[in-house]
Amino acid sequence: MADEPDDQEAPPPPPSRRAMGPTDFSDPLMRQEVKRAFVWIGIASLVALTVLLAQPLLVIFGGMVFATLIDGGSRLLHRVLPIGRGWRVAIVLLATVAFIVWTLQFAGSQIASQAAALPAILESQWMVALKWLESQGFAIEAKDLQGLVQQALGGIGQLTRAVGGIIGAVTTGFLIIVLGIYFALEPQLYRRGIAWMLPVDQREHFQG
Image (tube, rainbow, N blue to C red; front, side, top):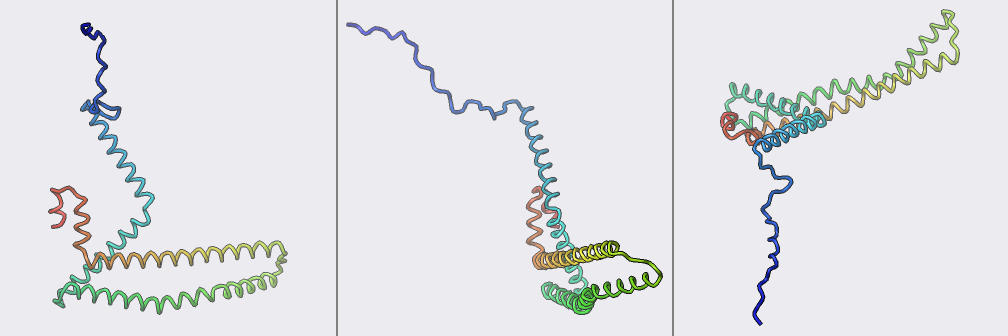
């Protein structure tokens, strides 16, 4: 028996893997608008990140300023002492450390002693003020005294917050000094790192 012709249609070929997907944009105008949208999203994210990291960025900028001061001191020292840059930076750093130690020894000890004597001075002056008020005929009740004591305790709380702020400032200053030393010792390393983030045609001008 002769073979009968196959009248059935052949199954359609499977879809090509190179077909357009939902994230593909064939319109050039659409591609341009998507690029602009991503640029604006990136700028907004950068602004938000800058706001969130404002304090660390200020510390970094402070370290850069301190490194600039160290570099300026080494350049001034080069006019009278023509030695290597490393030695000049070391001399400036030693002079800075000596000044900080001298400041902490004299001003720091005086501030600490005055802060320790402050509660006793406040208490004695408070008692003197109460006695003077009583001598002038003012009758101080227990409620008034309690309110005044609470105000005094509130002042002590403010003093504690002030001391905490001073400690935070000292810590921030220490971080700025450490960063400044690193920036001053290897300025070319960090300069190349910043130049790497710039366009290629502007790197040579930035590095000088």
